[in-house]
Amino acid sequence: MHKLVEFTYAEMASPQDFSNIGIFGREAVDGITGTALAWPNHWGRMTVTQISTTQVSITAGELYDDGVVYRMDDLEPIDLQSYTPYVVTDDRWLAIIARPATETVNTLRGIEPLVESVPVETSVPKINRRYVTFVIQAGLIGPAPQPKPTVNAGDTAVAYVRITTAGIQEVVPGENWRIKSVYELDGRVTVLE
Image (cartoon, rainbow, N blue to C red; front, side):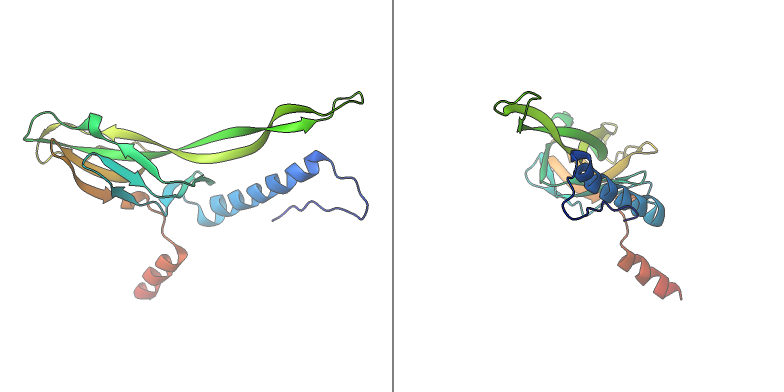
């Protein structure tokens, strides 16, 4: 980290001092992600798995979006039934797009009023969370084979899913947007040397 919050013996710390510990840590990680790694919009450690004829699940992982890391902590199920074609000979490709989001989570805390009295339970902002949401970009419906949908610049496709009237037929990772580990890049460079 390039900034540290320091305390001296018997010093009374302010709430902002404790907030700065988290802020400075986040700034340091964002700095490394944005400058050293410099992934514009990629995903890492996410796996899309078919769990039923019309559902997939995405494992926990990260979305790197313009130097900022967004984290997905839990398994995310996605139902694709509404995208199923109606004609037996038709199929369709779907792109599962990861999008960044932020939220502030409030928690009840005892707050001491200015005048001396009993602390009052009040909802106050406690956690600023960066997380990942998903949207489905549907391709054309028609006789097989249909092309995969074109993903907009700035979007991150985690996977493509081909679906027919019988359900999901194929799940293909969005390899163009998968972040490559330093280990993987080192292996490629070693082969070139």
